[in-house]
Length: 307
Ligand code: CP
Ligand code: NVA
Image 1: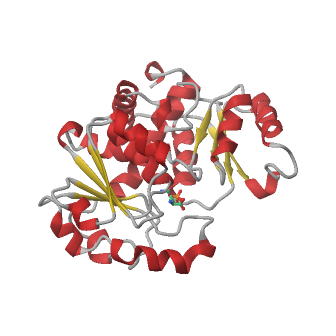
Image 2: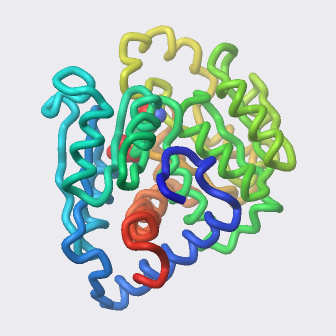
């Protein structure tokens, strides 16, 4: 793997390798191991959109590995306006050791990866959020979940996070279901790839059908960053796709509830579910750090030997 732009940059084996590396790093850090495999290495963080988890976990992650982050707001560097995306990537390639970028258009991170001579990581685009999905399946993996005996039900918008979660889920052998209102389905190319990769894909308008007997229920905001103008239309369309105690009641007993966060409590998920015993959302958030440390180490440091 040279870049991490999409879940397609992974294979089942490489994802499992990253889970093992993330587990080692997590365990080592918690045991007080303080190695600096990326001493003096720098990671540029470009953000065109707000972030809590992604920014903090990338910054803290590179620092814990001995390196440093340089945070650049998209508007500050004028990505694509003051300077073209390729020129930004070419310049950064001369100074830093890697780029993690959160962008509006997926094409922006693809362009960066094409021209940069350093690794580029997608820290969320309008099409995918691969770091999120990697941390999510690491969270399930470390709980001992057997993906081939797992049904993951996505309830809500067929958005960027949905794409990455269902693609990686299928790659790891999980059955995938998606419940969404008409017009908000995952991209047809993603659906085709999920069907090709995994044992089964069900796309339905009925959240109860998707939830029935599922092992994992996953949801995300109905209005993603950049879609604020569609708020009213989306609230109306998604009304019956809330992950609440009724929907959770259709899933397997003790099914896990996942959310990438930030949550819009009272919209796509209720307080009772988000804060309830089946929710693992804070484990997911914590594991962003460990999973991304594995990615950074592999891309910037050459692999597990650096751990
Ligand atoms: N889940 C996630 O990417 O959170 P942030 O938008 O806060 O980074
Ligand atoms: N789908 C959300 C995810 C945020 C982490 C968004 O793009 O805003």
